[in-house]
Length: 414
Image (cartoon, rainbow, N blue to C red; front, side):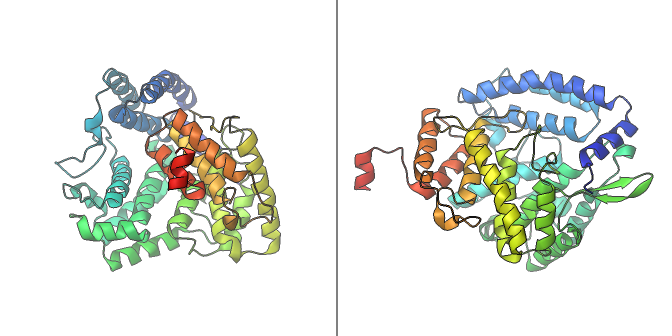
């Protein structure tokens, strides 16, 4: 029987603060109009980097803590920041400690911002301007292990803090640093203040292997219970990242498949659904997990997974998309319109809808895939979508069907 982790977490927050539910609703209602205003300003071509950071931290405080006084101040700061659209300064590296995300107060969010910046600089072969002194908490093997161990288990009933998001952000960054060859090489060549040795990578890999649960095959936050056993959650998102960054070279594939299939109707991040329906972000996670482990499981697992992927494809094409090749934004889940496109495109790309050679789950072909690929490109250009996630989506589309936004004559010449 699958555990309802979201109910368990809410129960623990209510044990910490008996007014938790009403307080969370109150602050969510304060945050919602600010999020809408931020989206409008971004849609007008403003980067709004400072406000975006403040919004992300507000959402974290709302979803992962019961620290209402800090959240109230963070919401006030966010509202004030929306008055000024000149925010490019918030995208720069700090000369003080080498971090990114000057409007974040939480260290793990600065780590998350750093790995995004490093990916961009690695693409440009551009060195960072300052040493990564802010990474000191995990710069040694012992420090890394201690930090991860401290964050792996939450005692929400005691301190009102769900550590899952911090654990996920830092472990994902470490996995990119250790397992993505271009990022590992970048750190070794350019980054001062962090020595990414073979011993460090081996120690991190050993910690990841120890974290994986042998019964479910999954990774997830652990929850201490005052009156019960330790609960190890089955977290779709954290498991996806650990599998993806390790290129599928993980143990317990039959268990991973069985757990993934069993999570189908659960709520994210402990299931595939958001607000009771599918979601292209989660669909992509599921599809990539299945693709990575396809050769490691039997025909019965293949059959069930194929049926589910077919349902996800039907939902993606007929529910999440518009007739002109757009993806419908869900502001309750995505931070930008570009994100809705990125995950929709990524799901279709992962299951081989655009490229039959990537279609691992069915013998069916999708001859309409190439025309839809071009239609999405033209939609994105018409709506001037050019944020980082939109650009990443466009890269996948161009790789799948060429650049359809050029004139026919120019494409022929090319």
